[in-house]
Amino acid sequence: MSKTFEKLQPYLDKSMALQAARSLFEWDDETAAPYEAAEYTSKVIGILSNEYMDSLINDEVRKLLKKLQEDKEQEELTETEKAIVKELAKIYDQLESVPPKEYRAFNELTSKSSRIWAKARKDNRYEDFAPYLNQVIDYKKKFASYRAKKGKKAYEVLLNDFDECFGIKELDEFFNKVKENLIPLLKEVGHKADTIDKSYNFKSYDISKQKEFCRFLSGYVGFDFNRGVIAESAHPFTTQLHNHDVRITNRFIEDNLESAMFSIIHESGHAIYEMNIDDSLTQTLVGGGTSMGMHEAQSRFFENNIGRSREFWEPLYDRLVNTYPENLKEVSLENFIKGINKAAPSLIRTEADELSYPLHILIRYEIEKMIFDGEVNVDELPKVWNKKYQEYMGITPPDDANGILQDTHWSQGEFGYFPSYAIGSAVAAQIHYHMLDIMPFNQYLLDGNLTPIREYLKDSIHKYGATKNTNELLKDMTGEEFNADYYIKYLREKYQKLYKL
Image 1 (tube, rainbow, N blue to C red):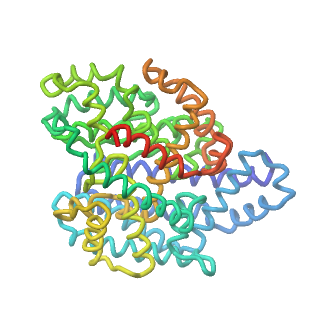
Image 2 (cartoon, rainbow, N blue to C red):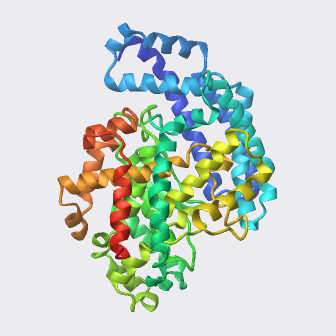
Image 3 (cartoon, one colour):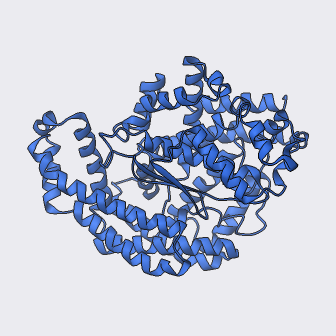
């Protein structure tokens, strides 16, 4: 460690501790805290956010960072230290131009607005959430304008916060490919939708049994209960304090068997990524996943490429049937596999099948671009949302709870996040084809042995944390950078086979 980096370390340690404390409060607020706590917890989160900003955005850290970026200093740094310095420079870019009072106020606002959103969704009252959403958007526009270089759009700034490899140009190209290839395929599949009966899915499934089976599923795919816990929340999510404390949540619906099962596999995929980050990186600025695109690739890989395959369920299906014999004893494994892969336009993103899922993301991407280009205001959003669902899916939400209120992301100011889900699905397909080439992937699943799959992901992606970006990891692992053609190929092959097109 260079002497300059050694001087920087106490500031990094303090910022890490403050982030961990804030994450704990946010976790508690989403999972266990009473509703009326939100107003008061937001003040605590605001103070912690202010202290976090002060721990990094100050004259001493600025001076140390500038020195560490010099060629002479770079020569004395380890590769990990270089990655930390690079990440610190990105954080500086995000925070330095934002007035501390505004940063604190924004964090207090999002702490409150996420709770307001949850109640508004439950009550189906968009009008209760809209004023908070309007404030969140105003802050995000303002913060992006502080940071945007000449000629750069505000939305581009926000996108880069979630994955530096994908800006508006790359995403426009990707989503155009999605529209050209997947909308016609979804329509073609739609003509045969009635050939698959999944009425079994919507019977009554005891919540306590769902919790027990989901806990088993999480452990089966690799969640380590010595380093992680599972709770409940209005919207499933994953958070981590470090690689030995990773927390996920789930949501249970009595008349929807699939919902909680695939949510827990999805969130377990996120958790496995964080748990597998090398100990040398944990509790540093690069001790988390490299991008939300790669993070969603891991969760979607476990949820879909593994979790919706026949090979995955062959050793498990009897256990599922024995958990709910009254509902599933007459449902064959073949019919179950068809059911969990059935494709049809739907209203709720988190319940969507693989084929229609990217259209849910396309809609959000286009709306977010409209918001930050000033083409739509908050009051108009439900109407725009419904119009796009009719245009791309042929369905219109009957109310806002099933429409614009379904996701928590905007309440937390996470504009630019949604594209990561679609990019993640595409990256997952690229990884899947690569792994099929280099290992007996399907045989591992049939044997109920996911360890070699997890270990390969750990060695190729997870252990590196944020020391490499999405394209660098893909290039090192598969030999090429992001290539959406694998995603189109995967969905075509899957649904043409399923529906015998």
